[in-house]
Length: 353
Ligand SMILES: [Zn+2]
Image (cartoon, rainbow, N blue to C red):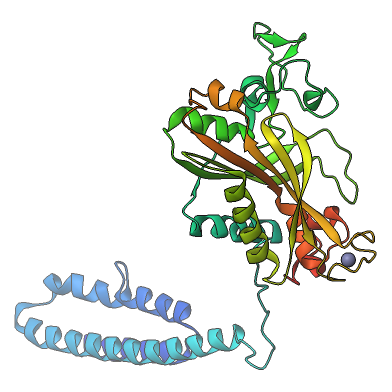
């Protein structure tokens, strides 16, 4: 029978084609040419209607057998080719596990932030809370409420960055804008006194700005921590005890402190605090310029005018305030000779801490 021979030839030809297919794409071409919509075997299946009735069952059976044989061969070849292709892909993307890895550099906290936290923790341990305020401040909070009126030398134009008001209708001080970058964090103390009733025990850490040229002991932007206590019966003895405790916590229990009379507009009396030199232990050396002492902070009893400005009765309450430069403490603690080294971002320097 001619049809049976034709199908037999088709099967043999297709199986040979399947075996010869070099990859899954070529194999798919074979499948489409035989079993696809216009495939050669599909044509026979479609023309079953023209087969004489008495032969139909026989032809149908043969067609099915041919189709099954082809499908099985396709499936088997497809598995073989897919496995080979996967192995080739894995080989191509091979990772050399003997290569050394790329190490990630671990970051550390910057020394300025670490010292800020260390100082804050000493005072948090004493029951103080942390207050923050704006870095762009008005003249009132930076100077006037701190007892530094318009003609006061501490607010000289050389020291302060003024922010010019572009709208042109702001009130001005001496023809200048009254908006500025704060030169001290003391303004936060004024906000604290306005916002809460005594007793007040706060520290205010933050950035401050001055029109200084950077040199070994000056930076145009540095970090300050100011503290304020307002309560009943606060004396200079409380101030001395608190700051002596602070210096011993920061620099070690063997360090001594001394208080030298000084002048600040917002405190009366005022003092500067020195801590004994950690290198020569008070003998005098180059680091302490032969004095045996290192200047560390400024402080004093809050001036009664400052209390009154903020609506606190100086007959009832008294208090003290202090301010310490974080960069200076960092340099003194780690014997860093130049403040600018803290800001240069040199990892060889910073990674030591
Ligand atoms: Zn010394």
